[in-house]
Amino acid sequence: MTQYRVVTEVTVEADDPKQAAMKVFALHDTMTPEDYRVFDPASVGQDVFLEPDDKDEARRAYAAGEYFEEVSISEVKP
Image 1 (cartoon, rainbow, N blue to C red):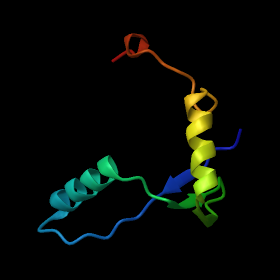
Image 2 (image 1 turned 135 degrees about the vertical axis):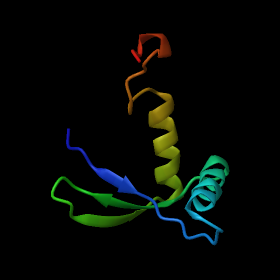
Image 3 (image 1 turned 120 degrees about the vertical axis):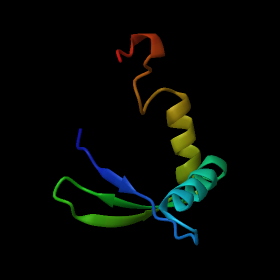
Image 4 (image 1 turned 60 degrees about the vertical axis):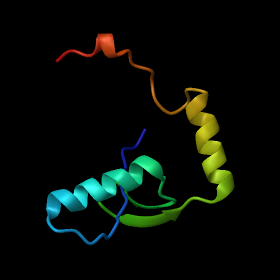
């Protein structure tokens, strides 16, 4: 399976970098982006916009355990 780097970008006004990060965290905590910048292993970027059907399929596949292996927190070593 190929590794891709996925980037979302949000522009906010803030008093300092930490406040900017906190504002974006709050946004991501309450809303999910629909457009992504995806980079392949050669760092070639492509803009990807998810349509409603894509989001529904992503939710279904995630719920079915098709995207990530389930890891128990008790198995994670510090």
